[in-house]
Length: 194
Image 1 (cartoon, rainbow, N blue to C red):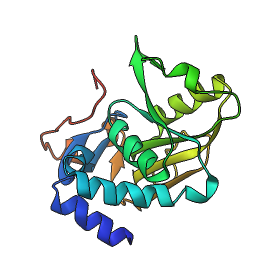
Image 2: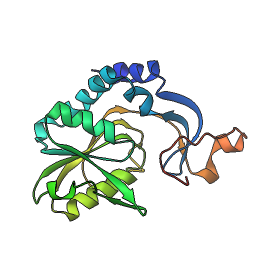
Image 3: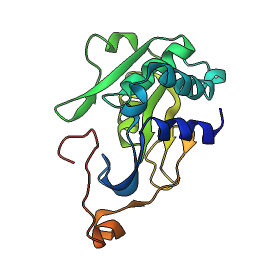
């Protein structure tokens, strides 16, 4: 699947949105991708996530881990396409942790792929990378449907590959041209308090 085809699916499902948005990272943007709009269509989610999995298949991941909440369904579908166990990390008192009995399944040297829906700064994914590395896992990389990092805001310390590289304006709040125009802001992100 070409990037244009995948982006068309995101547009058709309403996942690709234009306006003035405050992202989970705190940055502002003129584009927002609400992957939940894609993921509510199981057949399309499977199709897109299979393509994400194919980007990493040759690396032979043994487990897929996604950060809650945005990465859970993406991780599940990528893990299903790779036929490997899939778990998720979640915040507990502001710290990314493995709960629900998942921690014992992350063993020393286990080849793990961290999977997200959208990478903006890679902050949540990096928290999961550090959590897994702290448990002795070999984190082979980070996968996502969308990469909107422009290569310069990425906090990841592992290789990353995405199905779609999105060209979108991303601005610090104090330098946002959309704020300067007085456009109302939408805060659709998943992190509370942002």
